[in-house]
Image 1: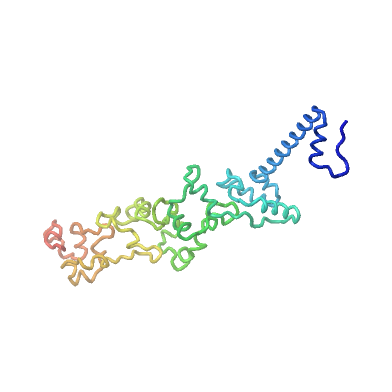
Image 2 (image 1 turned 180 degrees about the vertical axis):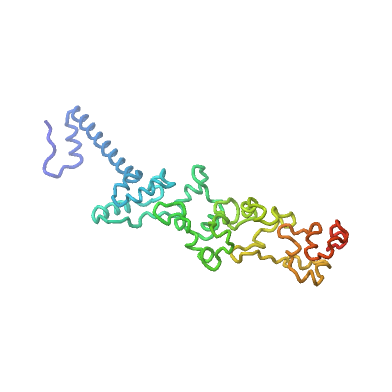
Amino acid sequence: MPTAPSGGRATLRDLVAWLGRLPRPTLVAAAAVALIGLAAAAYAGYTAYDYTMNNPAFCRSCHIMEAAWNRWASSEHRAVDCHACHEQSITESARQVIVFAIRRPHRVGRHAEVPAERCRTCHASGNPRWRQVAETAGHRVHAERRHVECVVCHSQAVHRIRPVEDVCVRCHQAQTAGARAIKIAQMSDFHCVDCHQFLRLDSPLRPTRLTCLGCHQALPPRKTVGFPPPVVHITLTCSTCHKPHERAQPVVGCSSCHAAARPALHRQPAHSATTCTTCHRPHAWRVEGRQTCLGCHQDRTTHNAPLACASCHPFK
């Protein structure tokens, strides 16, 4: 039976020579055992890597992660593995495991923070599986223009992705609770996104005409005035006259547009001394029939009735 080289200084050539003297069956058996060992080691290594890097159960194995696990399991991201969002290097991951094993902390420290780029890999990818936000009004203003990180609004608590009700007040204190808070009593219970529609596509975050009409067209006639608006003002936004964050009543400055187009009857002392909305009913604006004029000229009730006053007294 061949013996291995002795003396502690065997070279690679000596080892090859020694192996060459072994019987073929022995070499085949040794090679098979070595291959099986390598395959087993590779499989064990891959399984350990896959478990620690891709299986959320590994994170849960840390006893202090139970609360975070439960929130994740009931969140919108419950089908997303931990490291899909919380990506960090193997070195940092190993350090964290060692710290846990040695120090046994009682709470979860900050680790593997989620940058905005990580969110964009799903939510700005064009993949219909995820809600796409790149073209929405709110994300254009906050993420693109102001460079606000996603987690500022979407992670007020661990794994609570949906923004909390009062998330806007964290930054917009004047508009939500301060000097510029909503002044209209009927809108006091509205959430900011009821008017500032965050997920509206290809549109500014400020309310548009359609935003306002979405609520006001559904109100009973006695609670809204002259809807829908006439074509004459269809190009104006509601905020031209209505500024809910400044005052409860509309800010109507008709002369800012109509100062250079005031016909003779508008310049009559009795007419110029009163407000425009006395004759021009809000949202209707055009004076129709006799009733508007008779509101003041009650002594002309039967004068040329039933003709409209403008038939003889044209303002234009």
